[in-house]
Length: 171
Image (cartoon, rainbow, N blue to C red; front, side, top):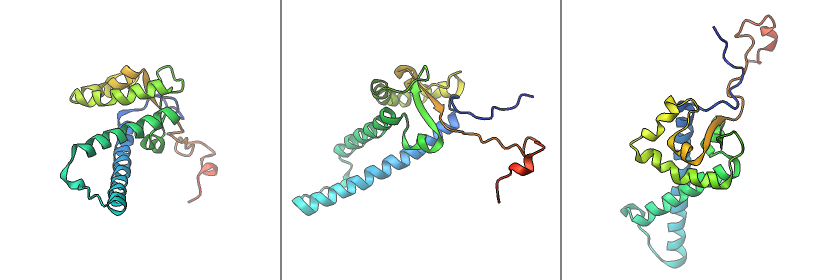
């Protein structure tokens, strides 16, 4: 039986980690947009006397939300290779060769990201079945998602280390 690696750092990120990071990103980006929209409507009403009805589903709000998502993901990926969810789960978007993500690749990934959804989810199958765990938008942009920090902490007391008791963390 082969022992799992002591660290997953640099390994391709799996579907569960990426889905969890995406769920965090959806929650964070939607919350920030909603708070920003509420603040904008309040200020418009207060300063200019313009009453904007957010509940009517104007196309402008949808366009604004899509633009916000492009900024949210694009800036995070271009600046650090991470979104908020990716940072919380220890994921980093890199160039396919493992190098840092440049602005051009980050922008291409932002534009290609909806393509994975538009294919009725088929664009995500590469994460499940591909050797490099790359979705369609990763292939288009020439990117990969990897674990960036110690995703698995070695615990010698679980591996039957004779010094295991000395290495246990305090309760």
